Length: 400
Ligand SMILES: Nc1nc2c(ncn2[C@@H]2O[C@H](COP(=O)(O)OP(=O)(O)OP(=O)(O)O)[C@@H](O)[C@H]2O)c(=O)[nH]1
Ligand SMILES: *[C@@H]1O[C@H](CO)[C@@H](O)[C@H](O)[C@H]1NC(C)=O
Ligand SMILES: *[C@@H]1O[C@H](CO)[C@@H](O)[C@H](O)[C@H]1NC(C)=O
Image 1: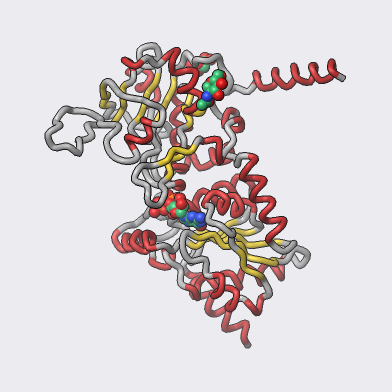
Image 2 (image 1 turned 120 degrees about the horizontal axis):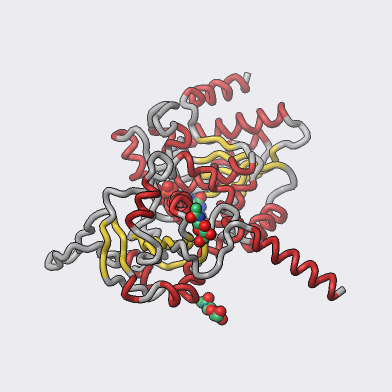
């Protein structure tokens, strides 16, 4: 039995060794570090996919930063280890990565001496202090910049302005230019002031979502919630982004062609149309009509797996009472989490039988990409535009 076990262990270890991601520590090809200093979860997730593609193109190990989070009443950001929410191992199938905690605890002392801690920015980042006129990235000025690097007691001795180099490794030979300018021996770690990736995520990098898999803790919590709190049977997950910050964000609809994550439905070149208000802030009418239509469609198409409930995730108003009243005739129950947990909301939405999200929200975008990678169906509120009308007609028609 013991021998069998050790044979198994050897097999298991050799299969780990064959994952292309595993290399000797420290990696002679060097590392990439960055602060996910922009936005909240959805923004940071978009950036992560870009950073992954960038690190792969430069053949450097990506240091997975903690997630930067903001708590009510606290001035400084909090850094939450990457692996609280997601597994590291599946990412290794794509490229070499290490968590920032592991890197700083072990590897940094071998290859990143204090005098080589140089911050990278495209061009000078002006100091908040007008008296400080030194040309610098000022990588630790402001929030969350300072608290992020302080979490790991990282200080920078100098700045490197890397412009005109950039991060778009898919449409240029910029990766080889990075290699020419910064060899790993002299530049063991390229530490970026912001993420080396774009927002919204480039079309080419969307598919990398499949390597971002929920930690056992979150996968289990989501599964347990669905099993114990939702009625048996299919359910629709919906994302209602409707807080005051979103109302303000939606004001930009008038003056832009694309906004935040909107290329995910409108296309990166607006192939599928221009922005309109309902896409950002669907009315109660639109929401109810769209839900009714989906429930009836499923009823006619898959009689054995009918929709029994709706799971609502929201940053503000879950509309539980409104939806319960308005959807009485289609016989579904409406649910939400008992306590606010943005990541658990996402994990549940990712496994729903159907999903309706907000096209402009990068929080919704995370769910859409995850479901895409699993082949699960998703829809957007008020999209396509023609369906807004259809919703009303369908409802009227139904009453006849
Ligand atoms: N619990 C919970 N929180 C949400 C939900 N929707 C949004 N939030 C919170 O609001 C934040 C929104 O910021 P992002 O994740 O960057 O996504 P976004 O919707 O594009 O919003 P902006 O940052 O304003 O562009 C999320 O990270 C959550 O903290 C939700 O359905 N449930
Ligand atoms: C990329 O880096 C790895 C790990 O250091 C190394 O084994 C490999 O040879 C490098 N590939 C190229 C094409 O340089
Ligand atoms: C750092 O590494 C040591 C030795 O491997 C380990 O015992 C410790 O738990 C690690 N600390 C963190 C914060 O990962």
